[in-house]
Length: 88
Image (cartoon, rainbow, N blue to C red; front, side, top):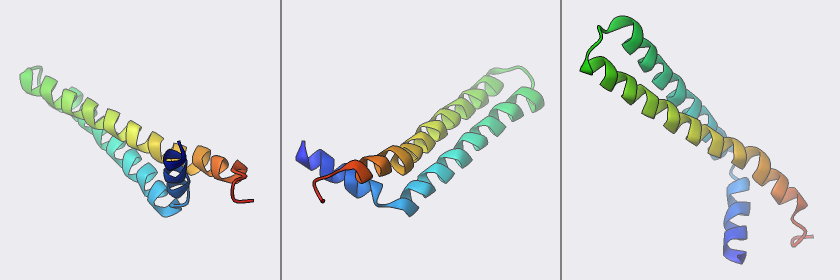
């Protein structure tokens, strides 16, 4: 358990990396949403449209997961670092 705690505290101290995770995740999410929108409005109903929408959905889901991980690292892990009293 001590090794996990050290790793979490190390992740909490990497603010720039965590913010980049949020930004890259949001960009990936919006790119996926754009791909879904493009497939819905600019492609005729076909297998190509469905595969394009599926790729957009996968991009969106990946972006949401990455952004959520970055957000958790920015907020919850930071709080965890502040209430950790082993260093006090």
